[in-house]
Image 1 (cartoon, rainbow, N blue to C red):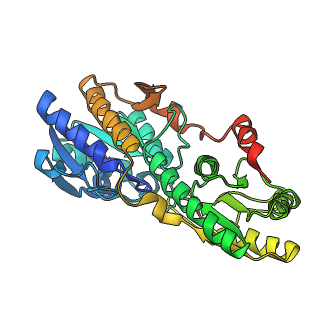
Image 2: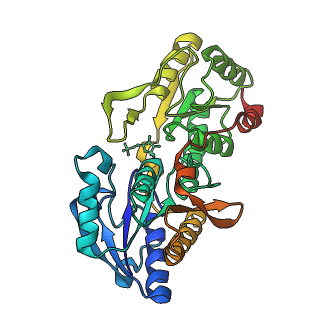
Image 3: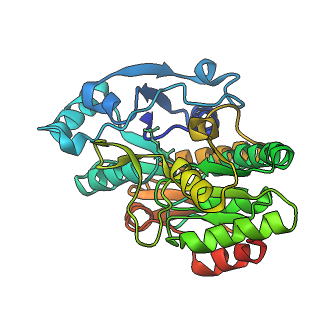
Length: 341
Ligand code: F6P
């Protein structure tokens, strides 16, 4: 069996651990051959491959990023894209595909399954917003990076009696903000799921100053005020229709300074949350995902995705994981709100 592997969408630490596990088990236990496709769905679309064998994956477990490269290519946005992929897979003698990605990459995998392709999905995103899996790898590393940043912001905020705002990633789900805000002891957490009341946020800030502490706010890039609109970098959209988020942190700092007279500063963590070496949790989860994904190929469980449920790795239908985003439930936000203000 010749199996193609691709990594699509926003990269994250842990991708190489998946690739390593897929190849190690696939070669050693199933006698498979592997072909690496470059840069997400661009690889199958344009027939761009790299060799993928035991030697290719030696030493990559702790390395961030993806040895295959990634992109946000959407073959359904390319005239004749699916037919092109079919032709390339046939000429390369590929029997099955393992697609490692988030909602967009796995959304393409779902549609290709409906077109009769043999595809297995592996959920990946720092946003942790994929349904049907308790966690995705990349998330724990992003939360660890953001929590360490918030720890550092506390000391400089105290020195200058300032409000420090930490803007984190998460596109349209506030999981990174929720976890890193709680872990870092933020005095306010703003997430897309709960549009915020600016007066309430200012109340949290004022109460912290009254208690002689400097307020720290953890803000998801997709957070927005109750009567406001999403703040984006520009009007461009990617091939899956996503805007480029960022700016809410600076917007909030300016508003708070205007109203309270206290100095406010913003730190946008951006792609630092997606770089560097994966945490141990992400290495183990990614490795387990990879091992089980190649076993799903052996079992010909096409159209399924590996997922973490409790401590078990299970198989779920791809459409179950990509239909609706997993967003932060109100109960989780209310739990965190015990520490606001
Ligand atoms: O989906 C993961 C993610 O990091 C989001 O949190 C973020 O909004 C987006 O990707 C950034 O995309 P890009 O790296 O293409 O700018």
